[in-house]
Amino acid sequence: MVELATDTERHFEFTSNGQTLSAKNRARMLGRSVLVHISIDAASAAGYNRYRDHSFDMIIDNLRAFVREREAFNGKPEIFVSFIVMCSNVEEAGPFLRLMKDVGIDNVSFRTLYLED
Image (tube, rainbow, N blue to C red; front, top):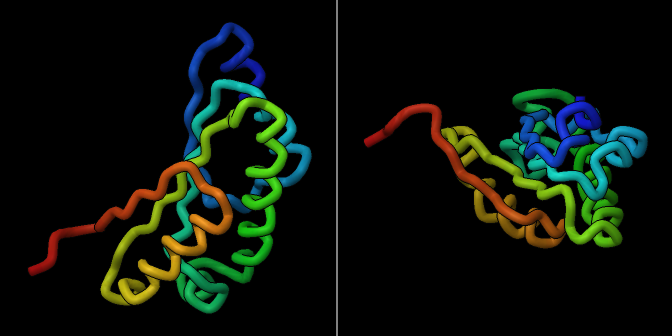
C-alpha cells in the first residue's frame, strides 16, 4: 500500500496500533511522504496491557528504531503518536509525554472519547 500510494509523490497517512512496525515494514516507509499515526494510550507496559495486550515494550523498541532509521532519510516518514485520555489512564499522560520525547516522536496528540465535567 505504501509503495503504491507514494510512488507518484502523493502524501499517504495511516493509523495503527504500532504492532506491525517490524524492520521490514519500517523499511518500506523510509524516505517516503508518509504520516504514521500510532495510538498507544499508555506510558507503561502495565497500562498498555490493561487496554490491549503485552506488546508495549516491542512497540516502544520499534518506535525507537524507526526514529533512528529515518534520520538517514531527512526525517521521513513523520511519526505522530496519540493518547486517548480516560479516567483510567489520566495519571499516565505526563509520563507518556516524557517517554515520547525520549523516543524522539515528532508530535503527540491527546484526545478524549467524550467530554467530562
